[in-house]
Length: 119
Length: 119
Image 1 (cartoon, rainbow over the protein chains, first blue to last red):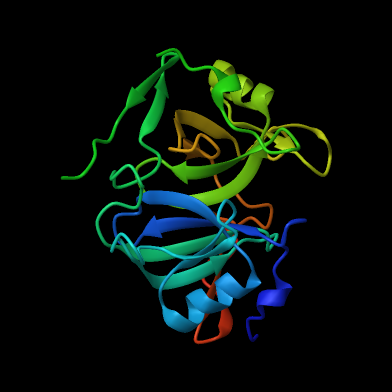
Image 2 (cartoon, chains in turn cyan, red):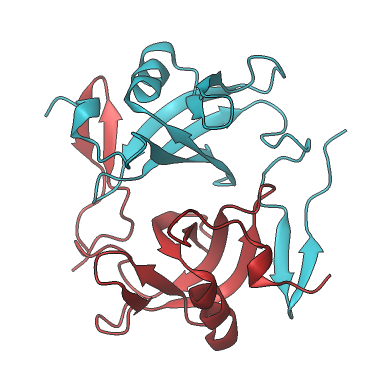
């Protein structure tokens, strides 16, 4: 069946969450949002493109930082309201220069930093 | 620093997305939503507990199906508006009986089923 971005279930703001996962290692790098056009751009260009809710504009991941996400595969969940994007991440995915945005773990009730910034 | 569920950034509905990832294999199993109390319950009980937006009630994953998610570790992202839950998933995570909800891949413009239901 041909994939149609309009078959996805977007929220009231026209957005769908997209989880970025590194190919091979399986690291969950980040979660951000796409609109239908960002999904289409991601598929067309092979560069993962989100919709920035704060800037209200497309966000080609790594366009300014160089920390691009090359698309390996886009996957859709059973409810069609969440995307999993398998990527090849160059350098850190997080704006804090950490490999993943999920660098804070909750252990025994305390927050523990489990990833350091990449140098 | 002590973890406080109120330090998380919930959306206008009081919810935060939570990504479930299998310990060890790194499989991304599903994404669902938690409110502050579901986060607290998850940490207290060690059983991953979501908030069902459709049923408007707590959803202890696997309570009826037996396909429970045992909490290994809760992680918070840099913006504090998304959670990554490392779990030990019993059987399928998806209501379609597939291991993961992300069983549909987009390849060359077509949808391809990449996981079959578990038997």
